[in-house]
Length: 248
Image (cartoon, rainbow, N blue to C red; front, side, top):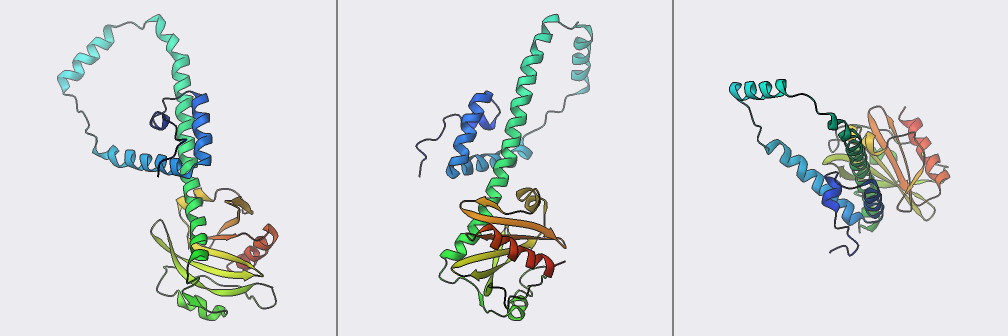
């Protein structure tokens, strides 16, 4: 499906060929349009994949001597100083573009994490292992994921463990625990921590919003925990704290 509002200069944006005003317009559209943001991410991945295939020119010794001799006899031209503002502007544009690519990648990772929660809610099988007993759910993951974790005690807390399922993030296996709080379903995602996970959830652990869902994330024992739900932030934080205590 084509985006009717797709900017015609996405390629120029990716190549750092736009003015700061044009960059701001494109960025605003990308914030509101996951389709175009995904297209940008795909273009970035394509450029990265093509980069190693680019041939390198290796000059001969004679060619280097000719270039060096020509450079040595030429005097700097006074008007070359006029290029400094242009070079500075280009550098600023590239900085903004690179920062945006990093932000876009972080946004994509967050979206992928949120999708795991949405997919579970939309699935006919909410969990792969159905049990309210943490001593049943935890052993089910043995041999399915390359790490272990602990679950808190849910009795008397108002939270109910519904079970768990195996999920993947960047092709790496992880655990998704589903916890109920009244009419709300809460996902607790656990993965081995990695640079991309750290980048996606940079900053202190706190409840932030993403697509109407509250998200809290933290790192502990080389594991990355992510709690997602449409429940109120206090409920998400309370459950997060119980997992933090259980995995200290």
